[in-house]
Image 1: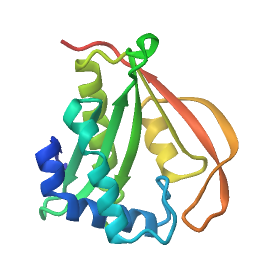
Image 2 (image 1 turned 60 degrees about the vertical axis):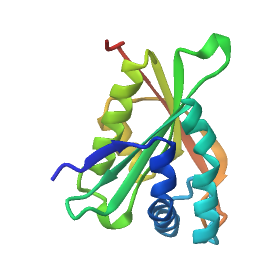
Image 3 (image 1 turned 90 degrees about the vertical axis):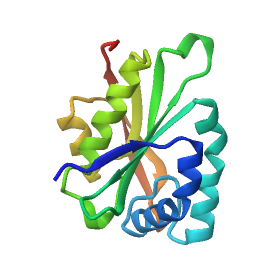
Image 4 (image 1 turned 120 degrees about the horizontal axis):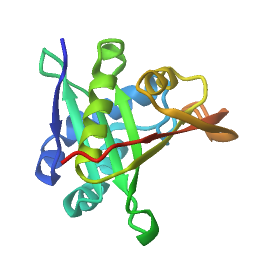
Length: 177
């Protein structure tokens, strides 16, 4: 079943902060760092989601959540639009995450597709991202037509604090009106 995807504005972000915090903690405990370490607790995860509210409010961050058929929040994705004058045509895809219980059921692909379409509608011509080299996410991006730009050794740590390389990807978009 294809998950239901909803764009989160600032009030929806606030309304779903507890579920979003639970999701982030579960994903980090499942081995995906997303910039966090294994000691991430619910309170810090909720505070991180709260910190996104100004960017969601001003439109520099676009954020979506997916819900499984049972109604549980099972994933998110976001992109930040570049604010520098010479880069307003691009955005960085961030925090594509799917709850471990929902992996392999199409949530990542549905979220990615929605974020790409929305970016194209917004006039974004280029999306970029980084992901842990060798992770399951690499397959998702490659199969969705993303192009590998290169690998950086020892770029970030996993939740346990071990260094891993990261792979950079990009995708050119056609504008949609």
